[in-house]
Length: 253
Ligand code: NDP
Ligand code: 8X3
Image (tube, rainbow, N blue to C red; front, side, top):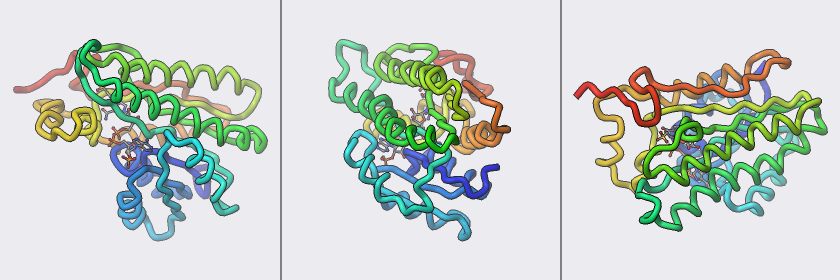
């Protein structure tokens, strides 16, 4: 039962994270929403059902002291996090390896891998002590198949896959579940962020095809979180019908 469970969603100010906030709120969960843009979190919190308990915190997952301080400041009734959705993440750039910006690489590694590690490492001991918890990592099909210019982004998502497997191994014998959600193309701010704010280039990514919506992905995450306690959905790969692999996309024009 998801009702009354405390769910922490990282990267909740946009896209898949914001959609998760909506579907988990509708299911009766209590929410802790993290992202760097506090104004976005506040706007989202206002449109959630009034009866939903929601706490927003401006947290940069790359900043370990900030992560620890935010967790330490949680009120007692929100401190027992039962579901952690490690969703905060980004891609930067699509240049060939030899032309890529080192700062883009660092940002992706720091967010997609180190951020996920900081948050998970901080929350996991409590979950183990309480013998209750579900960690849901948002990976990508980019972790399964590398594409040109994807090098470091794909490596971070392959890393999320390895970390999800590693967690499952080390948590064997506990009731804690670990699920990896690996979407294909989802219409969010993802491409705009990848292309450093170039909206035209971002829009072209989804031209002539129907991508997944953030809501489509959030519903799958809720499904994984609401299976009986002995059932673990290890890895879910979901793509739009118009996509067959990272590089094979059907476009109508
Ligand atoms: P969005 O850009 O719409 O959302 C990304 C979210 O991550 C934002 O809320 C952003 O908030 C947050 N975020 C980024 N950096 C940080 C940080 N350092 N600390 C805290 N929060 C951060 O993209 P998506 O919703 O598409 O992306 C969500 C996840 O889904 C990512 O992990 C992405 O790799 C993955 N994914 C996306 C796919 C797609 O096609 N869209 C496909 C497969 C996987 P803020 O900027 O306010 O901090
Ligand atoms: C996002 C999907 O194919 O652009 O992870 O890398 S893709």
